[in-house]
Image 1 (cartoon, rainbow, N blue to C red):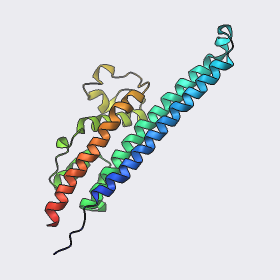
Image 2: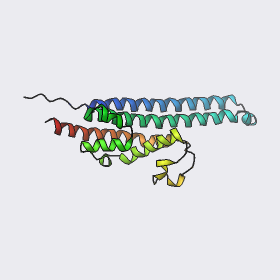
Image 3: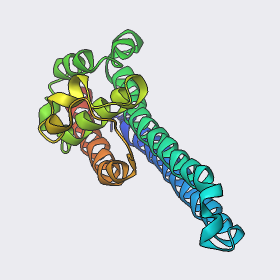
Image 4: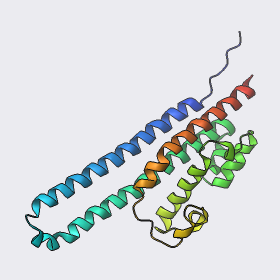
Length: 194
């Protein structure tokens, strides 16, 4: 009986899952801090006539929440991007993995092993996440590739605002994408190591 090396992609998926859970903890912590700060301010302001003295403090709470939601989007994309890079490294080597940070190069590298990225479950949501990440990091507005997506077209040029609902919507889809890509990579591995 010939020993067959196990595909490395399940381990990479497990690492990605831990990283996704870390982002979830960041989001939960930021929401807890926001609630705590708001509760403190509401208790601190004894009556509505003093409210205007604390308007900036309440606005700061919202700014804090927006910042952490942006961080969550960036961190969520980072989880996907690192998984993709690690997977390409295992499948095709370090030089191919170096290209995996550019989306079109990642898609080309996947094609080399017979995987069509558009057939990976939730690929559209992950592409939206990628575009949202870029917009959050570079523009803070709906622009570039994000503005080309049907869901965002009408908001072109507008400020991104609170990204937490988008994080909540895209988070499970990112995990499904990683899971399906893992399955496809495992199938490729088994076909090529036989």
